[in-house]
Length: 271
Image (cartoon, rainbow, N blue to C red; front, side):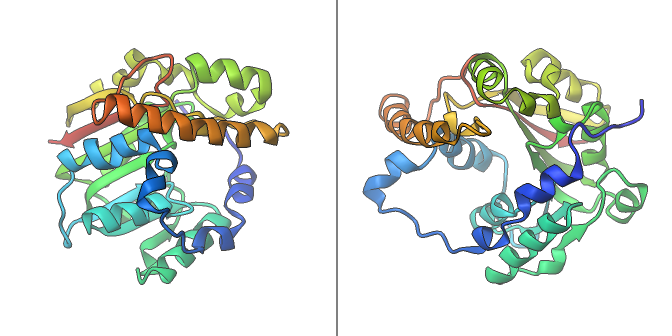
């Protein structure tokens, strides 16, 4: 099957264009307010799940596929101290990511401008990284199984693969069909069922599955509303209340559901 992108490059150029917004130093809210502002799903991922499998190691290399604007990659580096690399194919995305790295004393040349699908990139980076991950990437292709395979090509044997996608089904699908149906067209919705998502990894011959499932309890911030911008603001503040309730009632346990969990997450080890 010929791999086709479900979204156009100009879509991502427009998203990554406001470079100055990316490199602003974000002040951490006071601890008393973090229980509202800190996403509960974010907390379960970065503070609970990933630390079980990612080692703090200054010599290990991590590659994010589709790394723009670079905030997740910077967070990974700050949390696990791994040497961060990213691959991005849009000019605006590369520019934003490199400026963010430079502002945080990281090597901007570690952001590679390339098409992740190209043979040239895959050859140059063959089995080079200890950790390879993407967040919200593989669902923008018609053949995500091959995209997963490409992730593995640049991962060292014994390395850890982490892939997450949004769950735009259930509650989220209902809302998007009403307010922003066109955004659904650039996502592969078929793989947003756990059974289909898991198949992408089951077929990989050299991959041991460690974790695969729905992730998070509810996160309205993954929704986009197009011209209905007031809905973004409304959901943002309502989500703050949900963050508080989830942290108070669920702690580190979470409550996953195919209808309300905002993500599907996979973690595996390359044999």
